Image 1 (cartoon, helix red, strand yellow):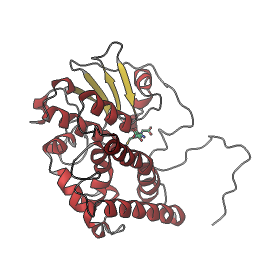
Image 2: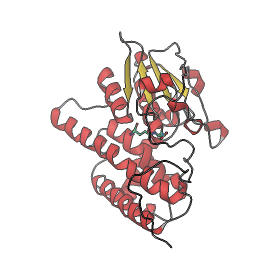
Image 3: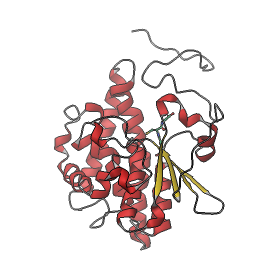
Image 4: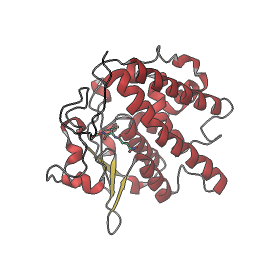
Length: 277
Ligand SMILES: N[C@@H](CCC(=O)N[C@@H](CS)C(=O)NCC(=O)O)C(=O)O
């Protein structure tokens, strides 16, 4: 194998290969004028049913299950494989061009929120639910929430990318990111050894954010890596993920903005409670 020698100045002159070569580019900002629809509900979600998207739909379903009518939402589909995250209206909600993006049209002026962790905090604070009020308990909740926001790029952008999406399987990055993902799973497993949920006895937004990535990795088929990662050895994570996954709001939220898998689990757009009944 010939060693890659980086040029003096990197230039974007050829596709990198891999699943996302057509949408990845080294610049930010809108690539075309494109309006987004606005529905009848207070909250407008522009998203897709990936782990980052599922965090928000689970949270919204939890809030609705708790009786908050103000959490009614329209969930619009953003097809990231077709570059819809680079349309002008989407970029005005999320300058980072990634799902999920939320627009709260019940405030004047409207409130835009991007980054799934920020959306969870916004909704938790708006409805005063699923977030502890005591400062120490809140600090523990934020610590795990921020842990997830920092850790997931190693799981998705690192491990998932090189194990599944890269044009070839390269030994070095797979080893590097597998080591890190197994370390993360051990962090979770040790924390959950004597806690029911991430922060103790109560389920909160940190469970929602961590479940959305590590649940499918350990008890489902995310990246088809169950055997490779020996996920069965993380017994506490599996027990907790099963506990979270049986919640009615999680069952509902996982189906929203989903466009793959068994047809009965796909609800590409959600504009009414009955869309999920
Ligand atoms: N840190 C962001 C990450 C969001 C993210 O990576 N979204 C992916 C889908 S899971 C996306 O929109 N990718 C499209 C792209 O990279 O162009 C968050 O948590 O909201």
